[in-house]
Length: 393
Image (cartoon, rainbow, N blue to C red; front, side, top):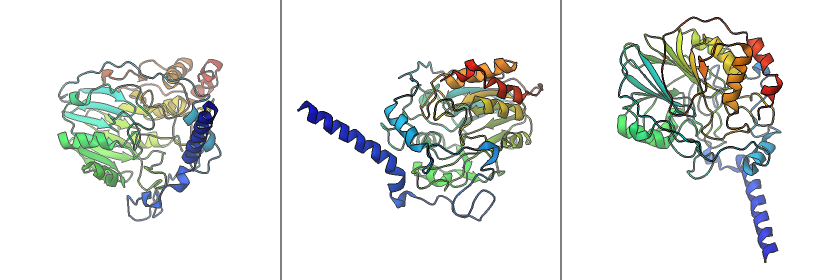
C-alpha cells in the first residue's frame, strides 16, 4: 500500500513538472490577446513590441523564454528548489503611516516593497508599480509569494494622485491593487502602450504613451515615458503585445526616475532619462538577476553592477535599490542584491549613502540635487570579480 502511494505521488509530481514545462506551448491561443493596434515604429513591428537595442551589450537572452536551452533547468530549480539558496519564509516588517501631503519642493519617499514606492512632493502622492497582493501571479495562492509585508498598509496610504505602471508582468501590474486604488482615489494612471487594456480589467482607466511621450499632471509636474530594456506578457503567448518602460517625473525641484524592470541592453537608457534634467531621486532595480549559479545579470534584469553604472549615468542622484527582497523570482539568495550593491560600492570607493538598499517601510527626506564626481565604471566591473563578491550566492 505504501509503495503504491509513493508511486502515485511520484507520477503526480512528474505529471506536474511536464505540465509546467509544456504550458508555454499548449496555452490556449485565445490568451494571445491583442492589447495594442498601431503603426509600425522603431519599437513596434505591427504585431509585437521589440527592444531596438536587442543584442547590444552582450545580451544573453531571457532564461525563462521558450526556446532558451536554460529554460528547463531554471523551471526545474524553481519547482524543486533543489540547489537554490534558502530564502526566509517571512521577513519582519514594521509598516509606517505616512503623512497626508508634502508641500513645495520638499521630497519624501517610502519603499513599500519590490518595485512599489510612495513619493510625496509638490502636494502630490505618487505610487510606482503598486502591488499589495500576497502573490505575484494570475492566481492567488499559486506562484511567487510575498515574504515581506508592504512597508505601508493599504489602509494607511494617503490619497493617491498619480500611479505609474512600467509593464504588464504580475509583480508590476497588480489588478487587485489597482482596483482598490481606483475605487478609493481615482488616480491618474500613466503607462506605456497597450497596458491600458489590461488595466481596464480592474475597472480603471489609464493614459498611455510611447517612449518619449509626455503626460501633464499639473502645471509644474509631468510624466515622461522613457525607454528601458525588457519584455511583457500575462499568459506567455501574448508576449510583447504591450510595451514596457521606465519613467521620468519632472518637478521644479528636480526629477524622479523610476527604472521599472530592465536589463542592461545598450545601457544608454539612463543617459536618455538624465537628458530631461537633473535627477533628484531614482529607483533602480537590483534583484532577480541570477538564474543559475554565478550569473551577474540576465538579458532583462540588471544586477548591482549594472545598477551602479545606471546610477552613475543618471548623474548619481539619491537612489534606492528596488525589485528585491519581496517576491522570489530567481535563483540568488535573499540578501545577495543588497549585500552585493554595498560591497561593490565599498570596493570601488564610492561615497556611501547615495545609492542604498533599504528596509521595507523605510522613509527618507530627499536632499536637493547636488553635483558629484563620476564613478569609474571599469573599477566597479573589476570589483565584481573579487572573490568575496563572487562568493555571494
